[in-house]
Image (cartoon, rainbow, N blue to C red; front, side, top):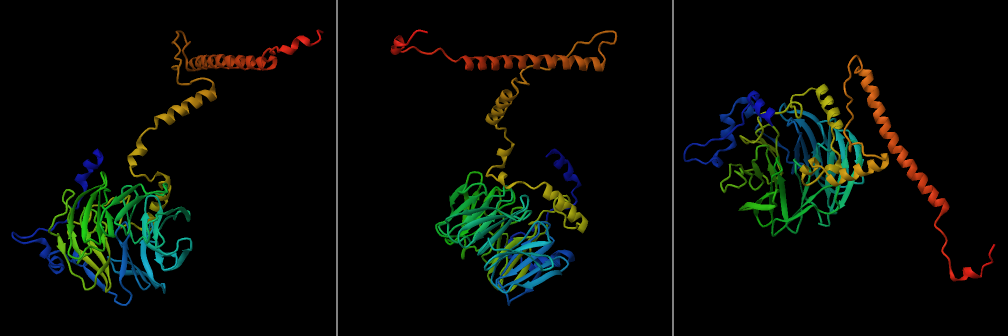
Length: 465
């Protein structure tokens, strides 16, 4: 933390902001006004893709924020570098598409189709068809664990380890159709929304939910967790938008929206986007302001919301295609080039992939409180020490190390000191071994002789030899 504070002076960029004139609300500022006020490079990030034939669209950004993945309900899939508008691949899977997600790099992505789960590369070639993952509705990728979490229409939550291609866990949630799914970026816990108004928190190591929260009186429509893992926002059929503290699992506040929210998304700096006419709220100190930060109307209802990492951009997928909206102050201004570098080359990406695989966190370490992994298990330590003492026959830590006294006239040379240390150590070991051998011999002697026979009442009739 100290090193990070010192290096803040070297960070060249500052986060953006939107400041209104006196007596004016920021929600009245349109996207056209923002595009005219910013520089040419930032104005180019506001665009629309008219794709009315295959909508509505789901979307996903890579962790570097450079590449965009679009998936239409009617089977259209497109991957592109959205900043240069260079198309990487485009295909039609010829069946209903439920969700799309990038994997660890921009070379692979997963598509949840009507029947099974498919994995494609950035050229549009099918790499794998996972028939053990049927009817998937939502996808979430856990980058530090290399796990792809899937929620299907039968109520099962399944985890796939993409580094080895094996299924890690399959959990029956007993909550019906799973159409609401979010992940906690800080703890890798998966949040699922159910039709009875509850939100459950899951880990692949436990068959039952870690936490069950009653969030709404109606079904849960959307859920999102902020990047710090502190707050969770939920929206339900009761038209309420609730903000929850995940440390205490209590409600911090809520709003009653005119139409309710069908999608929610948090930005890197804490802005909350709600797909109810696309209002962008700004939680200030864990509270929702009744006045929205920005407001934008679309021609069709939104079906997918994602904030682009390290950019003040909100991507919206809807029935008429895709819209890229400018939201000042949404993204982090500076990036860690060793973690997520938007300008990395192919060689740098390959080296990062190798390091990420070597540093992969096992799925067994996913817990509700990651701080538990730093604590020492005292009972286990004492048990291991007792087992070691029993195995060796002596406690190696019971007595301090022997330090020989220094002698004059060359008697304290390095070789002499080493020989004396070994001699004392060997004598102690001999004494312990001698004691254990004597005890073993005594036990064997007792087992041979055995206890004296007990006399009974009939022994007096035996013949005397």
